[in-house]
Length: 624
Image (cartoon, rainbow, N blue to C red; front, side, top):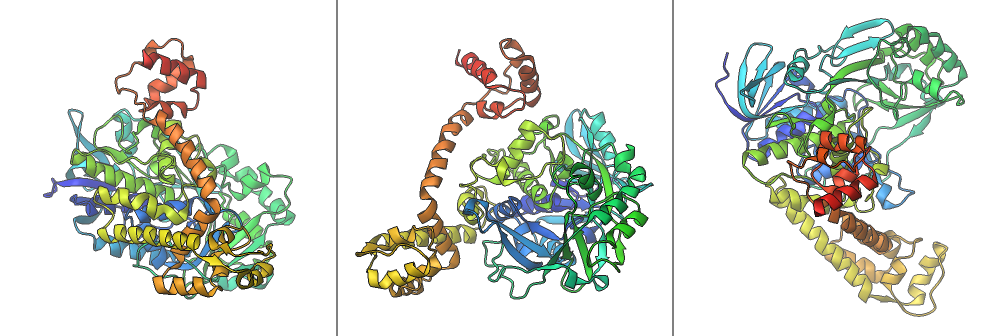
């Protein structure tokens, strides 16, 4: 059957990547179809019921700043909010929400159904329609041919997915859901390189069977914030607690009993798993000197007893999981609602992509999410957003939207994938970003909303809020520079903070920059209190002003470093440049350059295997 509607963009898969891709394309005015196996599993939280965290929270803020949905959905379904790393500098602060899994999925579906230009369909895509090397659409399991100008594949862990629990092995993209068959084979026939990767998920336990008195309670922040910069959401007024407990030598000994049947050790699993988030059996082997490992007991929603046991990912048999987990303090009578499992799936090395997320092999075909060898809801959502944006811009014959490494964590993520490739599931860390002082979670709107507004995605309302935030931040800084304070007014505050008293009248700007003080301390001064009330200065503006006061020197230094490196970003390499002719470049360097085909000298320098001397030769050759 030929489907009667022709689309501008067809998005395959409605996980976090697909949902953001479809929303972005539709909101930019493209006629969009989102096709997925199960419309009741949109943006399903397959693993932990949480959004954000270290570096990932910055990505959610960036998605929101550009007009994506992840921040709003996370706020509306949150059951707990924590700002991580508050004891460190603001470059490390990372927001995180614990979420209601069902509410999260339902909210996503509601928002997508309300999005103009977007249709939803339940079916399985089994292949692409390609004629004379040109992409024309997709074909489905039902035999339907759907024609479109561009296609975005966001298949997650479903491509030939295989689930492992001890000796039991069966097909599936998630537990209880069938795998997607046929598409990998079709892509390989078209010339794409494919590989296998592995991830896993912990068990779910009935909270009524746990003894929380033997665990450490982990509450949310006293004054919770939220992800979205918009006024569509509000901070939580109530929160649910998480809990922490630990494994012990007895647990480890019991787990070792199952190693001989574990597909992880028997060689049944070929795919590479995430090194930074290993299974519990992997932890015991790799960190054999540790006699305990931390487990986080996380509620799955407001109105459920189901608990997610973060840190106990496993592919061991049900019997071993059952006996081992019951030896953890608080779990003596634990009842399983779902056993842990490992999953192996197909992915496509992301070096086959351009920075726009478009494939190098087929025009108007885009990959986003775990299909590119990444892991994490946030990383997937970011790729989907960028794929959706660029698919529409290309159809309009407009300039591509590419974020640089000094502009966004999303820029770091995509550049890492395209330039370096992956040898394990990729996860974002703050350490991957060389400009993390610039890429803070608090200023994502300032960095990205004007850029997104310029391409027609971020709304006028969002841009207006950013302009107001900047205006008020300058107003606060100007006030602090002009306002003086007397010793008798401020010394009691300084004494209370163990800071040196002043002996003569001084500008507030100098006092406010002291590391011991924050804006809440200054509010005790009558002049500051009056100024804040008169000008309706909110918490976000206070935070911006305070960060500027204390870290202006660091921020300026990082900007200068970014500007220096951006000079190399501005030296383009022609698309038809023949690297094979430069014999002075090392064999490995030449091979990698020919495979990746970097767009700029700076990108070439980031390719693994390309040495600084190779870059010097390249610069000399191009200079000629």
